[in-house]
Amino acid sequence: MIKPRTNLDWLLKQLADEVPLVRNVIVLSADGLRIAQHGTEADTADRLAAACAGLQSLAAAVGHEFPYGDGRMRLVVIEMGGGFFYLMAAGARAYLAVLADEGVDAGLMGQRMRDLVARIGEHLTTPPRRSEPVV
Image 1 (tube, rainbow, N blue to C red):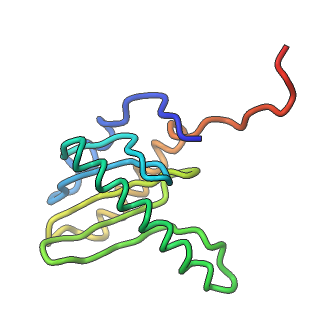
Image 2 (tube, helix red, strand yellow):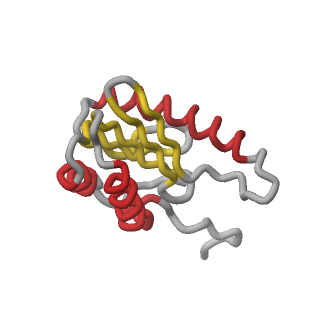
């Protein structure tokens, strides 16, 4: 279950500040719900989060075709006219999405996204529920 424990927007801003040409940074749940955002309006972030849910599902389906893989999507990169889209797994049922303009440093982007995922991972998940009743 995704449950943000703190405001993550400042961490997303830090990624945008560290990597030139970043437009939007979004953290979303696997079912397409926006958890945090930077650089975009809420409506745009919600549309991107919904699109990301479909994309990560598609990537996972393709991942199952690798006989020795685990079927989990780790990173999707799409190059389009005007820029790049990055989608990275960011914890249990959470993802980090970034839109960046053409000319972005792909190596720096990947490194900073991995760093950010490591930093925010503990904020995105809650511990498993107990099966026994609490007295």
